[in-house]
Image (cartoon, rainbow, N blue to C red):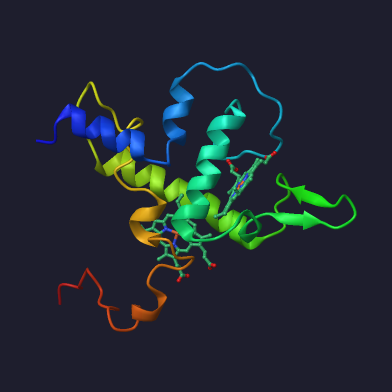
Length: 146
Ligand code: HEC
Ligand code: HEC
């Protein structure tokens, strides 16, 4: 079995901590306007960590998912103008489901503290995981029994 200490380290190292945030009571934050997956009362600091984690995991900058408004001359983070943002939301939902449904740790260290699977697990710093190898390893992992 994996020790509590080890799990704790993994939890600390994990940049993908958003489900854990929901468990902690925090002051209501109305800074963010369009959160559909992350907790709406997330602190600016926690949101920043999640977003930085996306950048590092996918090897991209903020503008991969967010748009720059030329008139306002600034990034408008609440707008959903780039398809990448909606894909990222679905990836977040998928990652949460994987952790919640297929990783059980124990009563003291719950899956909300430990993200066994995160964006980096698949993306490894690339926008599209191992695109160049996709054809070579395009082997199904499930087969019809006939
Ligand atoms: C891989 C895509 C992706 C990258 C890269 C990314 N974001 Fe995000 N960002 C999202 C998604 C998706 C949401 C909405 C999450 C939700 O609906 O809960 C979001 C939401 C936000 C919000 C909240 C906006 C609001 O008011 O609703 C801010 C602020 C933000 N991002 C800033 C950043 C910054 C700063 C960076 C770069 C350090 C960054 N993001 C990089 C996907 C990304
Ligand atoms: C189980 C593996 C896996 C995990 C975990 C995962 N992704 Fe992905 N993601 C993929 C694959 C595979 C693709 C490419 C799909 C394709 O080829 O159309 C992809 C594509 C994407 C894209 C679209 C890239 C593009 O330019 O077309 C975005 C954005 C993205 N993922 C964001 C995320 C974020 C953010 C996370 C963490 C919340 C995440 N992914 C977690 C496997 C994963």
